Length: 101
Image 1 (tube, one colour):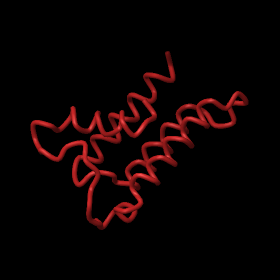
Image 2 (cartoon, helix red, strand yellow; image 1 turned 90 degrees about the vertical axis):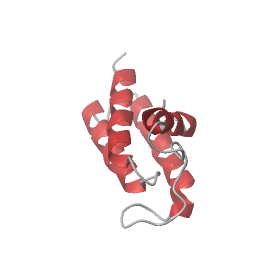
Image 3 (cartoon, helix red, strand yellow; image 1 turned 60 degrees about the horizontal axis):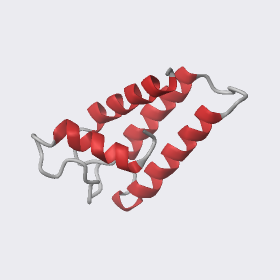
Image 4 (cartoon, one colour; image 1 turned 90 degrees about the horizontal axis):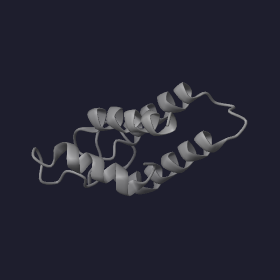
């Protein structure tokens, strides 16, 4: 689930009946989030870093801390024009569900 494709697809499935642009990254700057041109790169870094933290065999960072950091950073990237809070909570839920299987 730590892929750009899953991230965009989840947003699309959550909001496709609300907004026709659901699942598409924002194309303007907002008062929160990175510059819109950096969204794909910053999201990719976040997903890769989180995957690395989860795969770390030394368990340096506990799962709840990984999840909290992931949620916080996803909100900071703010990849979509709207629905980012709800989407980041759902992504974190998916992360925790997958990690505990």
